[in-house]
Picture 1 (cartoon, helix red, strand yellow):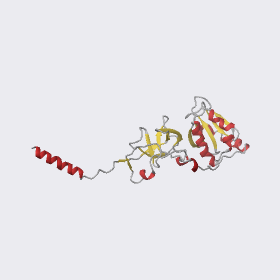
Picture 2 (cartoon, rainbow, N blue to C red):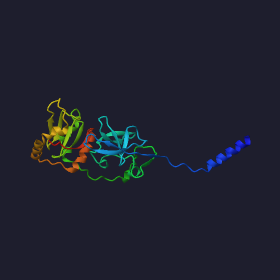
Picture 3 (tube, helix red, strand yellow):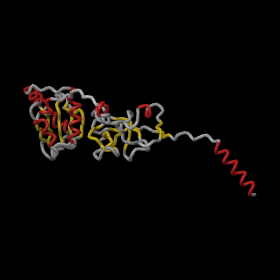
Picture 4 (cartoon, one colour):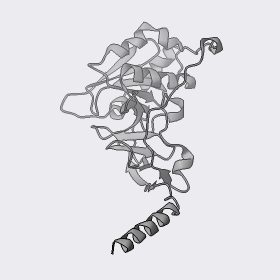
Length: 255
């Protein structure tokens, strides 16, 4: 009996020693569609990899996103230890133009839709030796960034928690909450305040601005102000520095 047991163990060890290694584990990612409530009709696909923290998802181009407490989908970024929400609302910017880092490459997400199981860690940056550091090219600074009247909006945290770009006329706009008591539009020299008719009438920013488009256009022309396309990305980054949500383009509703 003992001899048979020993023989069985030897046979088992021999089989194990000649066995082929198991293939690397993979995780099949199933995409599903979500809706961005701040932009009417906007939908996009996200994935839910198993190795991201609860609540986090990944877009087709590999960027982490999460749904905020207000129901808005916003991009995420690493703070050195974990993913945290950023002020950039999905749909308001091109993530490649913002200080955001994808957590997966496009090749890993598209096509096969299989992602190797591996821990997601913050991107590592290797500092250059002092001798190899070169002087950076001059940075473009818009005129409004040195205008004290414009930059004052960054201190209005009690009245503002989000910013965007008004279309036609194209002007920076700021407000607080879904139904603000007031919105502020930059007209070239100052922030023009548009007050809500009353506290009981809950209007959205497009509804509040719609009736003031003619006045805004006149003030902008009188101030000889014209917004430059290249300034929008700079303003989006500055809004994030102030801690304001960047909402992107805001189109007034048709009457």
